[in-house]
Image 1: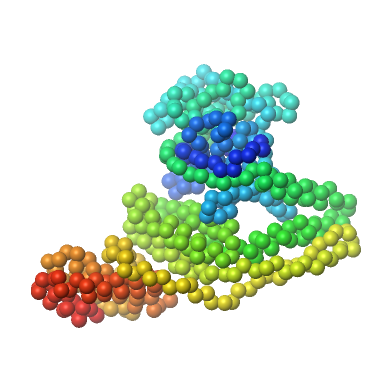
Image 2 (image 1 turned 30 degrees about the vertical axis):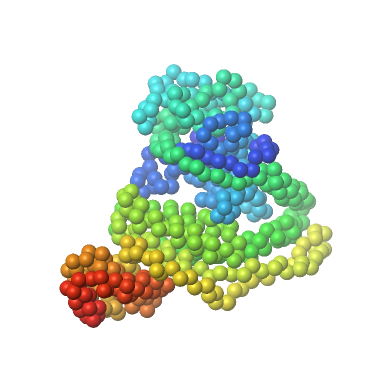
Length: 499
């Protein structure tokens, strides 16, 4: 489909520049129309822009994976009429160009056109998100050829204070400015158009050294092109392919496979489709979320597992609250998904970066190509024990949750834990001190989780559970004397009969 090709290029959009830090003030969320609710999480994208378009601040980032067929970790950095495919390589928002590989060759740096012109059409204005926009046809000039229509229409609100059009299209003369409300083929009434759905003020900064990254990209690309041009027969081509791949990519293969941490198990989508969700959209929401939480881990160095854990555990906490509040998932589904992610994050073991093995040069007699020998893969068998951190004293009942909440009524797990766990609310005494009731319930629930953790597949976080139990024991110890005689008696009876 020509529209998909053109819009993919438009949103794939370098001049060398000294700026290395880029700050964005708005995120514009777009959605492809004509898709059902189950697919909507996939057919969407974002445009990140600074506050205003100026000569000193004219770069933006777009993320439209369904148009560009890029991975969930790839973004497009646009500057003028050119674009670079970049990747987030760590948790500090440092970005790098997606380097070409022999068996996955693609241009990460593209010039979209030489000049572009927007011409207002006689079509009726559209109304989107309560805003009115005029329709403009896009024409481009490239490779010295005459101006041509690329069958692409943009509906622009020229009255908007937000101008993302200037970031996307470098116009020849009399530039049109404004907010793009819709993009699509000439007939904007079709389901192929992309429309604006949401505008979110942000304050996000990335670090991208274009000059350094472009130099590295060019060196790698030149090496690959030299290899492609060296073929002189079918036989030598086969030899050259194997030899060149080892010669050019042996170091990058080593770095990719051996120098980077393993991702959490769920990043392979293992087990996600076995979760028993009740919500209509829960599966698609969960599947889409995996790519976001996995993305930073893709380039984390060995030894950074604890760093990723800290990031990921903080990130997934929002699921239980925000996903329910926003209606993305029912409460039970959100808790199931949270526990599913947490257990694999906690299972990550810290690894030790390995030093590269000295490379002994080998000459291929058939092609004359110098190549290194294969690099042996590193196998890690050590058990990692992380340092204990005392954090239980700052816990509150409100910050706790229970693994037992994820059990179905017919689950076999119930028979392995105290009977009261299936009816925990009914066993809490009628304390006059309502705060005491919260602590009593949390203590009982955490004990249930501790027993549940004995069984395989229960996904109980032992340290968190132990910390919560210790916190409640400390609360009872420090507050009993302040209780009324009635509450003291009820608490003693509660603790003695908790089984």
